[in-house]
Amino acid sequence: MVCTRASVRNKALYLSFDDGPDPRFTPALLDLLKAHGAHASFFLIGREAEKYPELVERMVAEGHLIGNHSFSHPRFNLLSMAEKLAEIDRTDLLLARFDGIRHHRFRPPRGVFSLALTLRFAAARRNLAYWSYDSLDYQRKPPAELIELLRKQPPCAGDILLMHDDSDCSTLMLATLIPEWKAQGFTFAALSA
Image 1 (cartoon, rainbow, N blue to C red):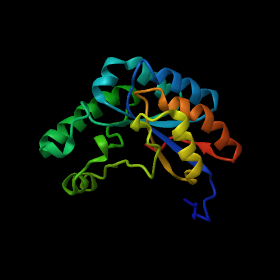
Image 2 (cartoon, rainbow, N blue to C red; image 1 turned 45 degrees about the vertical axis):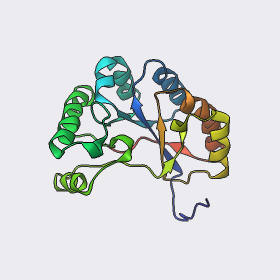
Image 3 (cartoon, helix red, strand yellow; image 1 turned 90 degrees about the vertical axis):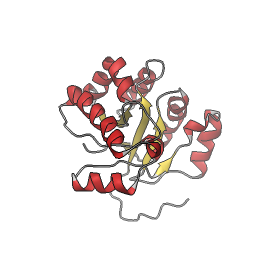
């Protein structure tokens, strides 16, 4: 892939992580981001945030965005609208305790959402969050293999990268890629709230 956005002034990449927080993997990822002065967006599963509030507190304290990834990570396409909204609302209430924000950006589990949910969010002036670049870290391939894929088809300035913090794969990948990307002039920012 060749980047064609000629007028991008800010060479920001938006790292985003789904499915955490996980006490086995999220702390090392946060340490790596902190060491590089990088900020990211964490789309949290509510039940995991409820179990590990200290990790959510750390994310907020270190300048990362926390977002809503549902309470239990169900298959959204199998839920009624009322069940979907209950998952979203329960997580928003929980996350508000950490950052005071009433409605968080919502990234649907597995990226699955319906037109009806999109219209509901639009009517409520709420943000659905998606990604523009998939790191494929959830495929459980060796990190070295995924690093090579990202080098062959690198993200472009402004891309929102999909990654996960429920394994060490993204941390292992980023330990190599963040310094390379920084050398190319990229910065790492959290999405806006």
